[in-house]
Image (cartoon, rainbow, N blue to C red; front, side, top):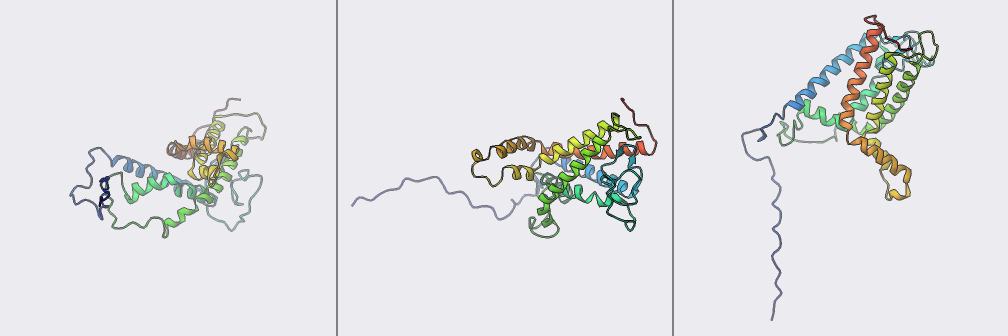
Amino acid sequence: MATDTIAPGPEAPAPLSPARAQIEQKTLRTDRWWLSPLLTMLVLVAFIFYATFRAFQNADYYTGNLISPFYSPCIATKCVPGSSLGGFQPFGDWWAISPALLILIFPLGFRMTCYYYRKAYYRAFWQSPPACAVAEPHGKYTGERRFPLILNNSHRYFFYAGLVFNVILSWDAVLAFRNPAGEWGHMSVGTLVLIANAVLLWVYSLSCHSCRHIMGGKLKHFSKHPLRYKGWTLVSKLNHRHMLFAWVSLFGVALTDAYVALVANGTFSNPTFF
């Protein structure tokens, strides 16, 4: 009786290794893999120190027609006169500390839960892992299922809040076209600074992974949703440069605050064009 024969197929894949290869070296990489996480840590630490100092300084955040993004909208009654957004000040005199602390929690929460920034500070501060193909010092990995990292799941809600603040900061840029007397048709270096800051924050927000998912997620047929497909396409192009926009906008918001502070404390005047 003839018997069927089966041609030998490709070999089965080798089972996954249960642990890291037993080598003494932390990595076999020969490049300066440690430079990127080191620079990331130094920049983030510098920004944290600067933002903390400015938040508790509670001074030099408003002058004439310019307001720092760290303090906008200023919603405490102890804000500098004229700095509130249309007189909206729901927090009474009981709020004795800096009004910036009422604001920074939202942009800070947006950046802390951002997908890119997670990668950045996980590598820089926790070495989880410090770089590709470099062993991390942790004995186990629990992901983002436990406190505090489980709070990163709130990223989408901070994204929504960030859009609100982008609108407010854009309006601040519009108001910068007024002179200190409240007359329109004025333009200064500070006006351009506030405009640039608002644009950078919009680009950073719109390049966000959550924004991309909101535009095109949960769709089975793009052909049935042409507007969302167009939006998803545009956001996807921005998403490719999300890391760049994250850093540029971070520097932008710090430099904008520094410029307003220097003008407010009289270090130099705000040059005007007309």
